[in-house]
Length: 389
Image 1: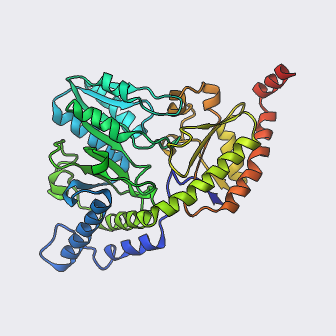
Image 2: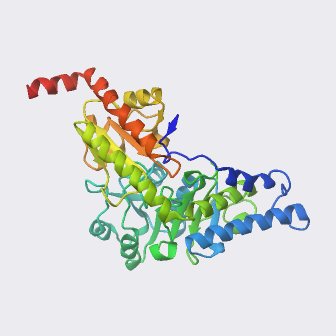
Image 3: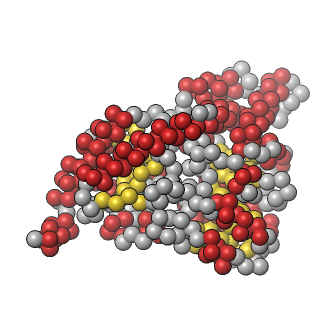
């Protein structure tokens, strides 16, 4: 199986696994039990991991809070800000991950008003639209750093400065970006930022939320004093160690790795668009994640395409793994203006530095005949051909 679905998850590396193992066995103690060595060693490892994450993101260790996932971090940032502020308006975009969209929909049912900003054909939020949407009752703006389906990277600093000019907090879901492109919270100017380890070769089930010093949000879980009283529950020291090691490894020689992945992506993209008629690349041509290539193919269904590619030995997706059970077209593709029938025929290929040029060549060899085979079974394609003739 050739793995081309790194936006869904990534493999834990041997180095990350080895960093985690001592906290399952040798240092298994509760990090809150600091009066004996087993707990103290666990605490030490956790705080060293926190310091590593903070250094990479450009912040203080006291601004890093560990969570069980990127989705949890998104939920916490949005609900925590909404509950603490006393204001009743939230701004987000129409192409956010469902962890943000569904949290906002939940708050709407509780009496909050949510503005879902539109995006252009490339998936970019307009700074002017954001400025016009902010009002005196706005508690938070939450705009993702990079889209998980089409890879478009937003002008986060510019958007954040607009929010701050109006005295509004700014959160970014950077789950797809952290570990893939350089992310520095001071440069971005954000108040909160979410990340998840399994997107950069760390374990599943561990993430983090950066909360800028002085920003006040409601605590996530009531109980003990863990995470400085903001998120109760015994910390997952092994996974925290894995997150820090994975992030450290991901950011080492990042520019070199990103350039390699970008070249693979560009070769794949050019090959698909040249070999498959009636195909289009979704997302911004340049302002996108280095490993992301999202295509729409007219006259076919994405589910059939994924099945045939899986049978041919390729792991790919049609969009967000969190929405893979849904038969509805992607809300992201609809938001950038694609009609339902074209949005249904989408394919996301997400590469990493583990992929090779030979794998891209193999993909370009099998994709065109699969698309053609599926189109031959499509009544829509048959009608299109009749119209052309």
